[in-house]
Structures are given as C-alpha cells and as structure tokens.
Image: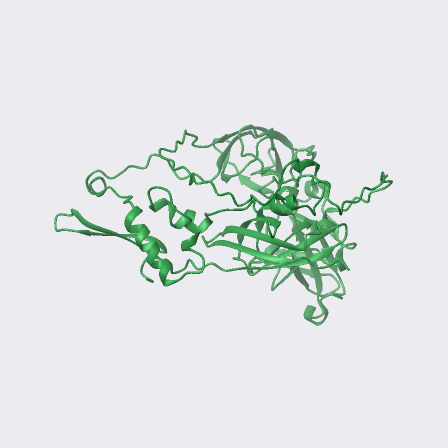
Length: 481
C-alpha cells in the first residue's frame, strides 16, 4: 500500500502488444485518515464567544458552519473526502458517499470494493495514449498576469517600481526592463474594483508619481460540464414533527419585550484591540501603522531605523537589530517567539498592523536574556493597507476592472428569538469561509452568543500540502454565571 497513491488506483494488465485485457480499481486508505480537532469556547464581553480550534491540520484554510446541535438544516451526504477521492472515479449516483469514510471497518472496505467494481469507469483511452497522445490545450493558470509600461524620465531612477500593498499582496519592488520600459508580475490575485498604486523610488528612497499603463491578462475561455448527475430524487421527510408555519413571527414564551434604547456613545475600537492574537497586556501599548508610515517607509526595517535608539543591519535573508544602549532585540511575531529576526527581512511596512518595543522585556522574563523584546502583529486579509480609501499622493492609481470577485461577507439572519423550535432546527449561528490555521493547526474566531446550550461545528478544509479535513464537533457553551 505504501507504493500506491492514496485514494483510487487503476491497475491495468496488458498483453505483449500493449492491448489492455484486464483492469481493476482499488482504494488505498493510506494517508487519508481523518482527524477530529478540538473546539474550545470562551465567554467574551458584549455577548460574544471566542472559538479556539486546536489540533486541526496545519497551514490550512477551513470552512466552518456553526449551527445548533439539533439542526435539521445540515444534511450533507458528501464531504471533501468523498468529493475528491471517490466521486470522480465512479459513474452514476452514489448512495451516501460519506458512509465509506466514517468509522472505517472491514465491512465498509468490502462495500467500497463492490462499489468500485460495479460503478467504476476507466478514465484512460489506452489507444489514444499509445498512438494519439493528447495535446495540452490550456496552460496551467495561477492567478493573473499584471503587465505594465512606464515612462522613465528621472535620471536618478534605480530600475524598480513600487506596487503599494493590496488586499492579497504586500508592498513589493518590481524590476523594470530597461530596454522596453516594461514590468510584469505573475500569480497576481487582484479583486474587482480594487485600486492599485504605483510609485517610483530613487536611490535615496524618495517617491515620485510615474506615468504608467497597466493591463491584467489571463487565459479566459468557456468551460462546460458535459455530464451531470442529479441528486437522489428520494424525498426524506425528517421534519414532520416541527411546525414551521409563520416562522418569521414566532414569539416564544421566553421572549422579553424591551423598552426603547438610546445609545449615547459608542467607543470605537482600534484595529489592534480587535485582533484576537493581541494579548491583553499589550492592548494599550501597541503603536499602529498608519498610512503616513507606509508612505514614508517602504520596508518595516526602514521604520525601525528611523527610531532613535536602534541600529538595523541586513544581510542576505537575515536581520539584526541592536539598541544603542548596548543590548540586542528578541522578536515575538503574532504571539510566537522566534529564534531570530529574519522574519523582518524585506517585510513591507504595509503588512504590519502594530508593534511595540518592550525595553525591559518585563513580559518575557528570564527568556529574554537581558535583551529588549519587539512585538509585531501582521495585518489580516482585507485589513492590508492599499484599499480604495487610502490616499497615495505620490503614486499612480489604477482601477482593476476584470479582477476576482470579493468573498461575500456572512450576515447572521435577524431572528425574533433564539429559543424557538424553528431556530433549534433551522437557525444559523455563524459561518466562516476561510479560517487560516497556524503551523500547529490552531485558529481563532468570534461568534455571537445566542444562548443555545450546545453548538455543532461542521469543519471542512484543505492544507497547503494537500491534506483534507472533514469533521463534526459538538460542544457545550460555558455558562455566563
């Protein structure tokens, strides 16, 4: 089994003339075993719950549906495992494909083998492969290609143009072809209607506004599904005991009608205060990166150099910072203590959310070793600087017309009450589409505390190295008393 690929393997027997005479499909479970992450809930002020996902797959993006325990709305018979490892190799409708991947047993392996024998179909036309091999009709796509032409007039021009931070890309220096005055970026993921900002930088770091023409290209073509299979037409009436008439106007006996509430003042929280990775002891000490800091300092190390007591030295992929009082500096990045400062090498200022130099390392204790500690927190997703409301006076602005659509924001429906049978069976508490886990498989997000005593988390996702996760976890909500 270690010599076979995980999932479905097609084994074909040929005669001496390369004619296929026998073919068999077998399923190899090695490397497919699913794991169940742990979910912890913590009470927060303002009717919120902090959800901590632990021991999921590392470096992954997860889609998580948060529903009441007794929900009838989530009745998925397929999972990421059955969709990726089984469905593409079978013809026709598959009855309950999740059956073959949960609580694996000898009986299920036997049933899966019969399924492959009866509904498995060959994906290979051996005659074409041997005598008429298929030609590649479309190159593999990875985002879009950004191409630009610039007008170079400044004699101090150093051969690069700056693309300021965007929603999915940090600030970067782009080399320009000196003969054609052109530049390009591959694997670029711009959003539709996003603003891109370009600047020239001379050898002293001074910015000027360039004359720039920019175009985004990709290999767009029509894609059609040639064969589709309808879902199981059999209707399952699992909801007969639930009375769902007039759902919008359900008023529970536990509903309390409140008098009119007048809000006189609302404190606006800063970005760093809203960051769940920021520890409480740093909330009021962090220095946030604003637009001016991004415009004045291309790299974060340039900003540190501008601070009076610090000297910064950069090598090939390495960074060292020394205080002029004689001590070195430790680095804590997004709550994780790193062995060196190399993570700051060529780090764009626009990717940094906030920072703080703890000169006494009072929070690190003896681990600091008589060195100062630099706390750095990076921006997340759309919080990266470079959005349309940011003013770059020394930059050329380009609007993206044919970029990728922005991910839709989930808004919880407005329910009259959270204590009705209708909400228990059909209500939605939260849905997060792209929770990113760290190297330990952990991640955090916040949800509304609806007062429901038990919550189910339906978790599916994939890591950067191709590992899948599909799990359901039910937890008790901690009491607020």
